[in-house]
Structure formats: structure tokens, C-alpha cells
Length: 264
Image (cartoon, rainbow, N blue to C red; front, side):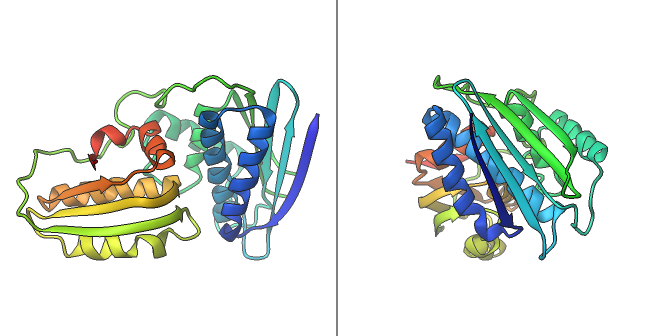
């Protein structure tokens, strides 16, 4: 059994470091690229939740990786010092409710731990010895291609506005995004899109160029769903272009790819 224990300050500035580390460990354990991408996102989401809702600026987060020839186990623990701490049972109820709802665009609360329930073999929520909550998942090491999509009924974003096709007015507004977009930097990264969206007129097309975007978390997915709804209500259009495989895969996994207009 290989084990690694890490203590990190409760700061989202460590998100990129943790993604790279966990991806390397998943590769070493024997997962293929498809499973590495999914499990890396699970780790990223759980870290975000532990920092945002189980910690304050003086807190630490505790991470434990363990794997052998058969299984991989990841555990994350917080100190329970957040402004609005949840009990273990309250979190269990929230995860269960959100897994039935299936709305990944809801980035409030700790409901995004639901993807852990979907993409792993088992998940356990318990009280942590550090004072907060411990979330643990186990996944059998697998190098086969994972199934696309999530095991829920209906749309991943129930309030997603589809509407009728809009005849463009000829004005295309292009905003280029770049780098990894996660909870630590999403407000700054998407500011140009929000600015253009506020000024968008009927018939116009807002093109978000993602050619230089290397990673997106569910926080970005939530904003993207909101942008699509806003453009439809304004009788305008939202297009994405230049999707890299890692970005396209996440949108496909959460069921948004088929609902968006993707330019080649």
C-alpha cells in the first residue's frame, strides 16, 4: 500500500498544485487519462468545498492518498471552522438531495460533493478528528474508457433556457479566455465575458474563445449555464470555439456540450 499525507493551508491558491499532484498519483496507480480527468476534478471539487465551507483563513486542510494494485482511496478533512459549518448528517442529506436534482450549475453550499458519489465506487462522510468533516472516496483502479455522462434523469441544468434559434444581427463580440479556470480565479478570468454579456443586444453573438483554456471546474460550468440562459433571454446567442479536449470532456460529462453552440 502506497500512502501520502499532506497538510495544506485552506486557500484556493493551492488548487492547481493539488490537481497536478493528484493527477500524477492517479497515473502512477494505473488509471487511464479518462479516469484521471474525472478523479482529478473530484479532488478539485472536494478541496474547494473544504476550503469554502469548512475552513477560515487560519485553517488547514488534510489530504490522504492511498493505493495498492486494486483500489485508490482519497480522504480530505477540514477543521470545521467555516462561517456556516454543517453537521455530517446535514451534509449527507445535501449530497443526496443534489444527486437527485442533478444541477451542477448550483455552486452554493457543499452540494458539489455529489460528483464524488457519481464518479467513484463508494463515498463516506464522517466527522473528522480535526473538528470538521471527512469525505472519503474509493475507486477501483480502471484503465478502461469511462462511460460518458452522469447517471441522472433529465437535463443536468433543469432551468437551462433552450428557446428558439435566434437570427443573428451580424455583430459578433469575441472574448478570449486562457489558462486554468477554477474557484481561485474564476471572477477575474470571466470578467471580460460578464462585461460583454451585460452590453449584449438582441441578435448579437457573443463568442467565447477557449482555445487557450486548459482546465475548467464546476464553478465555470455554473457560470456558462447562466450565460446561455441570459443570452437566450436577450434574444442573442452564445457560441464557444476552440475547445481543448480537457474542456470539451468536462462539458460533455455534465451534459452541456449538446446544449451549447460550438464553432469549429
